[in-house]
Length: 151
Image (tube, rainbow, N blue to C red; front, side, top):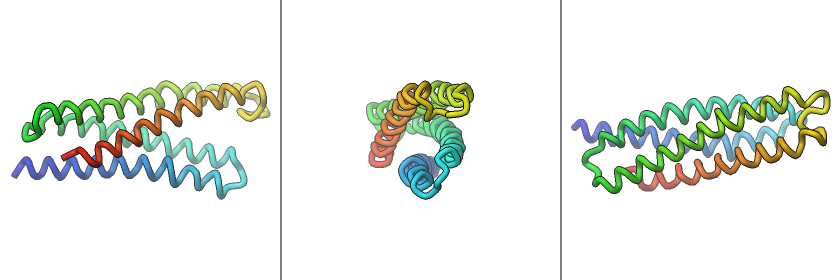
């Protein structure tokens, strides 16, 4: 009975994590930029959503690490693979949230009146944003793997 409850908890967490990543990153954020005339406001709202997503990712990842580590009904190789995927997704979150996002925020704060669209800051901000987007894409693809292989 406990194994079934843990399996359902894993399913719920995997679904929550993957669905939230895909919804925020590929539906909500693009919709903000497509519908709001003020790109700064769209970016501010998207930033808040991505911060919330990072916290949700950290919680889901930590719980899934614990659940998969205790999933002795899974064959060891499969359990290790799932733990590696969850760990890699957490690394993506940590690198983006604690590595790239603070750099992007500092650049916004120091950019002056032209903001990050001013020529001096635009290229660096674009590079940081691109790196963040690649990490998010990697995490999203890993989430797809997790959805199909979590059992």
